[in-house]
Image (tube, rainbow, N blue to C red; front, side, top):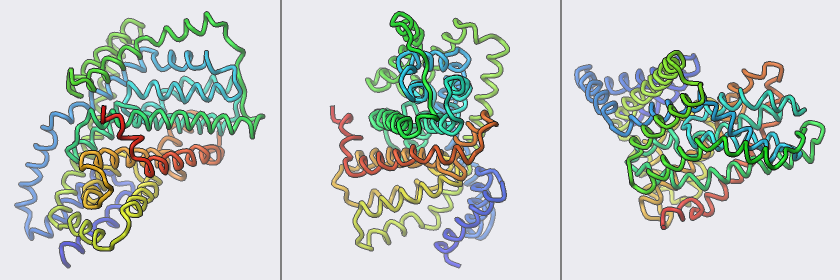
Length: 438
C-alpha cells in the first residue's frame, strides 16, 4: 500500500473511531501515530516526533489566548453580564412581535463579543432567555431554535477560539481575522432577526411579546451593559490598533470581566475556583484535540496527501469558485457529525493548500483570510444542522419539555439564512475584506 493510499484509508478509520464514541482527540492521535509508524516502518521516529510535536504545539505563545478567552466567558457569566445584555435588548425590542426572540439573538451577539465559544454562548444565554421566552408565550420550537442559532455568534463575533486555531494553522494574523469576521458576524445577527420577523408573521400564534417599557427604564437597562461595552472596546480596539497582542488583549479582558463579576457580587472564592476549574477542563479538551490533530496532520504531510490533492484539483481545470463551493458543502455535511474545532484541525491542512493553489484574483493574505471566514461560517452552520448540531442539543437539554423534532423544524429557516449569507460572501469577497484596506 502506497503512502497516499494509506492516508486515504485513514479518513474512514478516523470516522469509524469517532462513530464508536472514541474521543476525537484520541482518535486523531491513534490514526496519526499508527499511520506514521506504517510509513517509517518502526516506532522510533514517530515516538521522537510525538515528543517534538507535543512541545512545539503547547509552547506556541498564541495558543495561550484560548484559556484566557474561555476564562473571560466564565467571569462574564458569573458577573450577570449575559442577563444584563438580554434585559437591555428586551427593553428595546421585547414589545414587538417576535421581539423577545430578537432580543435573545442580539444578546447572544453581545455576549459573543466577550466569549469566544459557541457552546458557552448558547448555554449561558439559554439559561437567561428560555424562561423569558416561555413567559412571553413563545412556542418551544422557535424558543430553542433562535437560541441555538444565536449561540453560533459566539464563534463568529470576535474574539473567536476557532479563528485563533485557524490563524495558527495557516500562519495568519489573528487581529486581521478578527477584523474580517466582524461584518459577517453582524450580518448573521441581522439575518437571524429577519428570520424571526418573518416567522412571527407566518406563525403569529407561536410568538408573543412583552408590554412596552417606559423610555427611562430602557435607558437604565442599557446603562447596565456598560462593562460589556468597555471590555469589548478595550480588548478588540486594542488588538485592532496594535496597542497589544491578542494574548495580551485576552488577559486584559479576563481581568476586566473578573473585576466586573467581583463588583457585581458574582465572583467569590468558591465561584472563582469553579471558573478556573471549568476553564481548565475546557482548555484540556481543546488542547487534546489540538495535539491529536497535530500528529495526524504530521502523518498526512509525510504521506504527501495535501500536496497531491492540490496538484490533482488544479489539474482538473475546474472553476476555483466551484472547488470552493464543493469544500464548503463538505464542511456542512461534516458539521452534522463533528464539532467545529475538530473539523478545522482535521481539514485545513488538506483544503488550505488546495485553495491557495487556485486563482481567485486576490492577494495570498486576503485569500487566506476570506477562506477562513467562509470556513468559520459553514462550521457555524454545522452547529445547528440536524441531526447532530451541537447547539441544538445544548439548548434542548435545558428545555426538556420541547421535543427535539420541534427544534429541528424551527431551526431550518435559520440554516437557510446562513446559506444565503454564505452565498453572498462567496460572490462578494469585498464584504469581508474591505475593512482590511483602511
